[in-house]
Amino acid sequence: MSCSDTFAGYAFRAIGFGERLLPKSDFTLCEHFVLIGSGLIWNLYFAAFALGFGFFFAVAVAVARASDVTALRWPAKVFIFVIRGSPLFIQFFIAYETFVLIPKLAFDINLGFMVVTAETRWLTKAWLGALIVLFLNTTAYTAQIFHGALLSVPKKDIEAADSIGMSPARKFRRIVFPSMLRLAWASYTNEAIFLFHATALVFFSSFPAWRQSGDALYYASYFADKTFNPFVPYPIIAIYFVVFTLILTMFFGLINRRLNRHIEHER
Image (cartoon, rainbow, N blue to C red; front, side, top):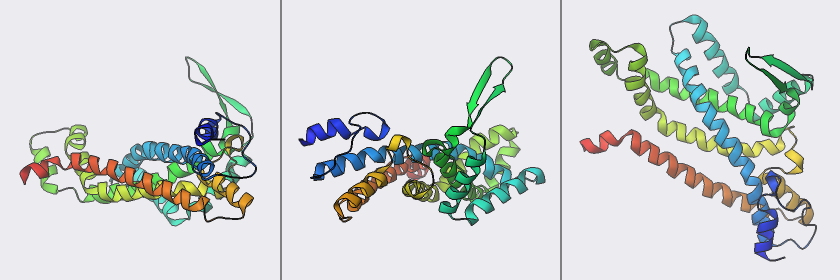
């Protein structure tokens, strides 16, 4: 099988397209790169959705953490403390055991104008259960970063907004939120990189792969087991992660430049 045939057959196997059977012997370097790259689609999926949803929830948790209202501040503090205080791998284990206890039955949610049927059995699958764990983890760490940035927003900027009669919502949108992002972005970039790397832990968690089509580490482990040589597939994973970490860093760097464009103009 040529490399182009390998790409056509296995490039999207991780998401259910292409050859169903994995190669059994005489593995080529192209098969290593294509199949491990196919599995990386799941790592990118976990990172993208966890970071995307986690960002907005982290802002809400950070605001609650900085609130003077006890009913908002203490739940946010406890949530951040518990997630940051426990290892991510243990969180995977606890979440899976919890989801398994939930009856694997569908239940109806009446929204008034329509009835939505929710199935709990998907919670024990990696594509949803592991994503929830990663989402909660990055939400807690990001909320702590944003909370520190909120406390560092210059008081004079807030006082200036108050002096011209800005409403609390507009003050947050125009003054506090942009300043918070500028102050937190470097640390948040590190959190995004950490979260992307943490997606490799999904393979070691209890969550089963979808249709036996797992992430990058799933395929790397398959090649290592078949060839008894881990020094080819695992360095390939490292190459992929380094490349996408570079892309992620450049992307966040562009956003950081956008957030601080006024500083560059002043110079």
